[in-house]
Length: 501
Image 1 (cartoon, one colour):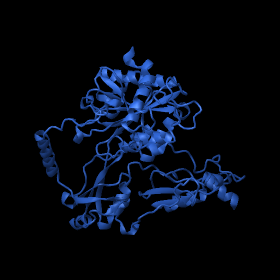
Image 2 (cartoon, rainbow, N blue to C red):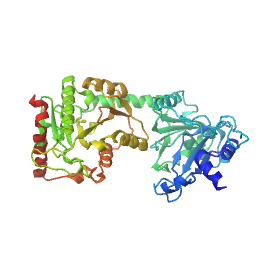
Image 3 (cartoon, rainbow, N blue to C red):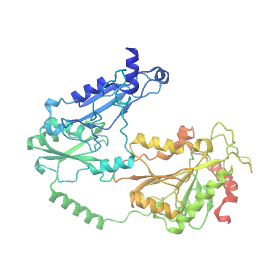
Image 4 (tube, helix red, strand yellow):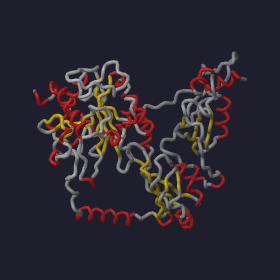
């Protein structure tokens, strides 16, 4: 028996697979059993696969949990707020999220060979069902509904402030308590398939819609949702026209008189380490490491993508110069080659440290209420041994937040990068990470999509082993210390400075 349990834990159980295929449950929770090798490592992991469609038409959600109290602190407890299927109309049960896959059990049942091995060569029900990310995005986007919502406007409610992980199935289950659902439409991005945080629920009766209004400010998936009657097409068009008129008559945004990055405001100019024709380098006010700096255009321009060709080219040259300086062991706070921490720096004049690599990131958010974003590219030195892990840790962080990077393979020029940003992100908001090998990771930030403001600092703080420095307010220094940092950087960077050529 012990061997059978270990075998099932490692490769899956045909018996359990047969039960799941025959019963077609709405939820399937399982534990990851300990094998001899897993027990020492903390036993198992938490895993939630995409919902899959059953022959009966509804979706099954599988959640695997790690062992209780495991050393890796993987999730071992999962809570569900379930409404019995008997209390739901068939239309609610048939709602399928766009990322629903075919059933993994849509394969012939495994049979045992005479020697006890599976007749399919041991693959059983553990066949690989992996999709290349681009193909998955295309499949999900193709399943986003664009047909008109069924039902009457006076029997339809509009729901907003939804958690982004709440899918159609969960919404249908939740709102079915008010009555029979004719149609449910979750707002999704047509390119990525991601939820936009709102939905329409059409009921068969006005009484059901009235009951749904009573769910206003109810907590659902950790958020207090807003429920109100949906508007007709005429009302929505009138609202859109009114907003357009308001925008035309609105006063222009206030000038960026308080912009910290505009040299004309003469704020913290003692942090400036180099000034070229259209851009400059300034030390970060509270750097992740002492020689964390920023490359900034002189003009108040919102993003790298929006820079003039000459300004973009100049900033591109600055990036190359900073990269060369760090690889030569320079920087304002060089790190000895065998230092235990990136913060073990030496400031002795003329001292060179071990080679380091550059990781840079740009966060482009509109910030219209503050006069608009002023583009700045954060440049953080990373020891060579840690730099090799940079891409992996940014990809892991993206996975935790539920998005994937668009990868731009080492652009050869500023124009190449601007073209790539325009191709992937249009003229909208985005996040860009420049890796040590020149590869650039891009993420388009959709309208209204939440974004982790300190994302880059948090990820690099963990990469560098100093998570306590991810908040710049915790790294503030006196003006005297800041000036000292800027002067040290100037001295180290002088031979690489693009203004010296």
